Length: 223
Image (cartoon, rainbow, N blue to C red; front, side):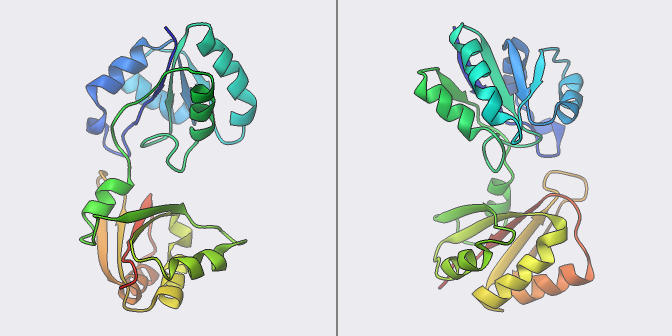
C-alpha cells in the first residue's frame, strides 16, 4: 500500500537516529535524498541498502509528478534531508502537499531538528515562539527586520557562519543593543557551543571569534 514517509536524520550525532527511522528506510521501495553523497554515508553506517534518488531544491518541481505516479502504483517512499527533519528550511513541502492532494498517506516520523534544542537551551521564553528560518539575503531584508522589531514572541533563525556577524549587527540596529540573543552552533557535535548575552555582547564575541558550522539563533521578543 502506497505511503510517503518523512524521516528525520541526525543533525550531527549518529546516536540520535531512531530505531523506527532505520526500519522505515530499510523497508520502503525507494528513498529521496537531498544529497545522495551525504545520505549515502548515513545509509552505509546503518547498513541500509534501499535504492536512493536525488530530490533537492533544483529538481523537486520536475520530479514530483514521477514520484506521485510511483506512489499511486503502490510503492512506498521515504524523504530524508542532509540533516534534521525534511521540509524545515529544506525540500519537502511541495512533495508533501502533492501527496495530500492525491490522497496518498503521509507519515512524518518524530526526530532530530536543530531549532528545538537551540530554543530550549537558550533560556529565553519558549511558551510562544515564531520560526523565521533563513532571513532574506538582500531583497526584503530591511522590511523583514522592521516587521520583526515589533514581534513579541521569541524568534528563531537559521544562519550561515559567514553571515552571522552581519545578522547580529542588524539585530543591534533594529532590535536594540540590549536584546537577549542565544547562538547555538554545531548542535550534538563534538565542538557544540551556545553563546548567550545581549545582541552587542554576542556580536562582539563572534566578531573576535569567526564562527564555523551549522548555526541556530534565538532572539528575545520585544518586551
